[in-house]
Image (cartoon, rainbow over all chains, first blue to last red; front, top):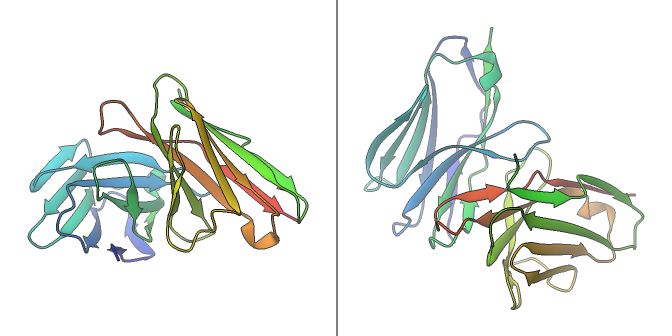
Length: 111
Length: 115
């Protein structure tokens, strides 16, 4: 059973702080990893994709991948109240677009 | 704008009836689409892989006779919930992989309420 695990939260951080979201996955052959943001009642929207070990930065967001530890993380710098949402980690196991999602981490950024 | 569109955005149906949800790729051909279901406060659960011109591949525990998937063209997949019951009420989301092989687009989702 391929699994993707996240802390469900809620994770609460003050405005301007760094929010750290973590994800582990079970299948070592996984190659593609994604972070999605989902607002209540809406479809997920892609924040970051990462394919290689190391860090990938895009604006206030940094994704980190460690394939040896089967670990993916997302850092959000200078968190804003508008970042409050559920963040979903997803793994593409077979490179064909079939994503397995974690349970999501609810983030709350307090003004 | 959206590159994968779902219709309807929300639907209410009576228990025992069937309801069809459409998923369209708007500016690219998608040989493969995916259908997910999401219950409140839960994550997206993959239901099935929709393959153009062939039968869908269902995930374990998903009833293929209840959730009929048809992918008759390269831009359209449909999910029909047959003999719907209140426990089928959920948020149904489709996705499609772009021809670049890497980019995955999600539809806006369809809320189904069975009363």
